[in-house]
Image (cartoon, rainbow, N blue to C red):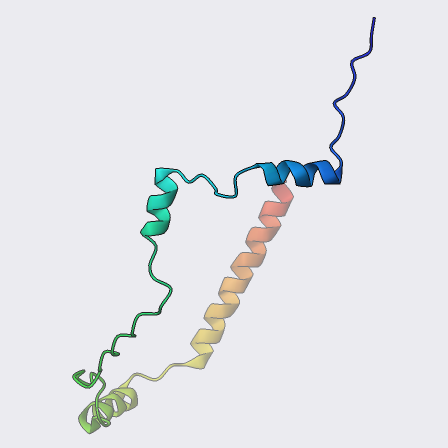
Length: 109
């Protein structure tokens, strides 16, 4: 049984000579030619004039509305007073309820 010989590698000189035998012109397909023909020109197009924003109408109020501010002040002054004692008792009750729920949950698991 004979061993199969590997093909001999080309030396650098042989590769250069082989490359010179090929035609210097590349072969382009119709698709490639159409692709490069449809490319835009290399020269830049003149830039378009920027759009002016002079015609926009301001939507924000120009100054404070004194009547609105006065109405808010009157509403704040006439609002019922908050009793902080009631708020404190409410917060403490919620905390106690959360604590008792945690104890019951822990005892069942």
